[in-house]
Amino acid sequence: MFNSEFNDIPENPALDLYPKPLQAQIDEVNEWVYDGINNGVYMCGFAVKQGPYNEAVTKLYQTLDKCEEILSKQRYLCGNTVTEADIRLFVTLIRFDEVYLVHFKCNQKLIREYPNLFNYTKDIFQLPGISSTVNMEHINRHYDGSHPFHQPIWSYWS
Image 1 (cartoon, rainbow, N blue to C red):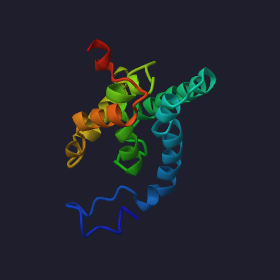
Image 2 (image 1 turned 180 degrees about the horizontal axis):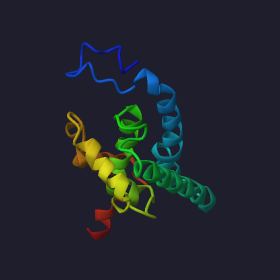
Image 3 (image 1 turned 135 degrees about the horizontal axis):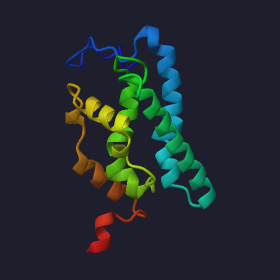
Image 4 (image 1 turned 45 degrees about the vertical axis):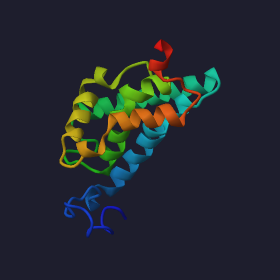
C-alpha cells in the first residue's frame, strides 16, 4: 500500500520498492529479517532470563551472518535493486552499534565488523532521501528515555 497508494505525496513517486517480479522474494526476506533482526534485537534486550536471551542472541547473529553471506554475492538483499526489504533491514542496522549494542545487549559482534553489512549500511544511508531520516541524537535520546530500566552508558561515568 505504501508503495503506490500515496504517490501524490513523495518527491519520487516512481520509486518502486516493491516491484511485482520480486514481491514473493521480498516478502520471504522481510519475514526472516523481521523475526531474526528487527524483532531479534528486542528479544535480546527484553529477555529477563538467560535461556531466552541466549536463544534470541544466537538467532540474531545467525540472521546477521545470513545477511552478510547474501551481501557477499549481491548488492542488495533481493538482487541488484534496492527494495522494501533493504529499507526494513537498514533501520535496525543504522541503530545497531549505537543503540542495540548497549541497551539491548547485542554485543557479540558490531555491524562495522561485518564488511558487507557495514558497506551495505553506508550504501543505503547514501541513497537520496535516506540520510535526512536518520538523526542519531534523537535516536539515542529516544532509547535513553523510553527504556528506563536500561541505564545509558554515559550515566555510569557521571
